[in-house]
Length: 318
Image (cartoon, rainbow, N blue to C red):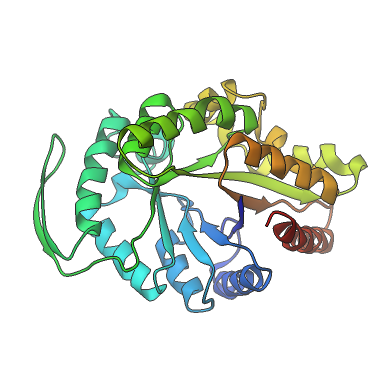
């Protein structure tokens, strides 16, 4: 199992965010992590712009988006941006996309959120044709009519990962993409629901075994602080409370909230949790550093302790 880190989700003023992103990606690469994943937070930096920035300050680490909402732009526009970013990153982009959630697409952007799975299938058809360039992109389906030339191409090929939680989306991800990017999925949900369905779909479509990228919070702490870590996760990462998609996914596992997903405790406890995800079929972990403390200095110290532990655990997983 490959180990990566989520970068860019923390709130902060824009003046300091760029320097912080640069510092974080330099650490991740120097620590020997396999990948870094940039979330597309509705009110924050553009994920693909973050990839371009981090590409300029790294050389080997894979750079992924987790994930770019599909409804926000035409598939030709996304393909153009992604291919340009892939070139800037020397072929290190993993493009994570997804249909997002009703509270982002409909309530924030004012766009329709009807039949998101069907929309995703049609979108991916256009996106795949555009990423396979250079050459003409000629696709007509229920959603798009596209006849667009392109001189861009992906060298090496760019993996496309689709956020998929339910059975239909997992089928689409398996047959039309290179894998899935997850959040709010525990070991049981992955091992009994996600991994079997997406793997079966990929095999039926003649595709390689899919990548399964699971995002989880991680906090190095004393055993007496584990509950505090879980409580903090539930305070600052509470998407499950607003998303029916996540609620349905939680129902397939044993975790009841994001706190239950948190790998918290000493190094041995965190490694044991990582190994459970590997046994469930996860190919890549994307860890969300979760510091705890009462003051800013305590939070910073906690973050750096967890980072050091993650760097050591990356070696143990190889």
